[in-house]
Image (cartoon, rainbow, N blue to C red; front, side, top):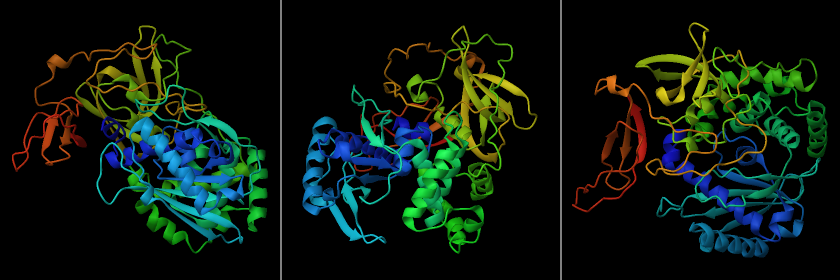
Length: 469
């Protein structure tokens, strides 16, 4: 529930992300699957490369052993995986709801579409939510797979982490460009632009192009160009399906035009017609900063008074943020987080209307909301982590725990001068009786109360609904 409010997504989307992490852990623990199942696709980008990304809903694998694509093997293997997951986490994956559809793909080879139902922490009754598995054994793997740690930012993360074999960064990029040209789906366009934009994870351009050529040759298709994509008959469907296929995976959906208009630049970069511009970091202004400090993977772990993950999402998608600070709202372009030598966390941002660079004390931010107003970066965006992700332990907001190393928890200052009715209010809903509760602080615990039939709803945790001012 805390993550639902932090990311601005429904609890069921966050629950699926949680279950995906444990399913990957179960696969990694299985003696036969761990070495021969290679993780790829959008969920691989989310779980192994970018923490600030769209929430994906399925798992894609290329397997090195074709004999694994057999009904009996798959059912037996996933019964073992499900038993291990239940023992470690309590997540139920009933074997009666396993489904593996074995079919002949367009290349005349065997592929598998799997569906696994689960009952997670939200305890949803029938119909159970499902996870989709796309499994193939005949995809060309140009570069050697690499081990990556799975980003699982939840409090039950295994102490030794979760490691899986997955596509390397350049192969993922090339695969996404090929997929975009082949099927022209919204998620592929979103992924291609997001990979290209990401600061600090600069792919080898020549290697991406070489991998792309080999993948297209294997598929019997031409090397993608912007002209090929612009003339595809599926373009109208791509526009119309943008919202339907992506809106539920993101706290706010960037416009289709924003991503489509940037696509020609990606192809110009790929074919060495232009160089990707590298922006300089925002200057320190007049603050004495800890130069070696870097923010941890999840701002949730900081117990900040206002959910800040939405700011990182906005930065990654080039969206302005409506920031309430010192009893005033301003539209900002977010760039980075810095720590002063006095251990004060600062958000560096530009005021969108004036172009002025400002630093805002994180402990004094009163609210933050992503908007659909676009901005063109003037400095390097450092709010999105790159490289191997690390997930600090997460504690419930109402439980006092030590701050991560290098942090000092701050008590917001100046609040005594705020009028009683001023500032953001957080609305939570009881998952049983649907009664709504309004909070001045972001606290999902609910007061003891009864539903319409007189049954006790005490001890319930509320579902985050909205923020109002």
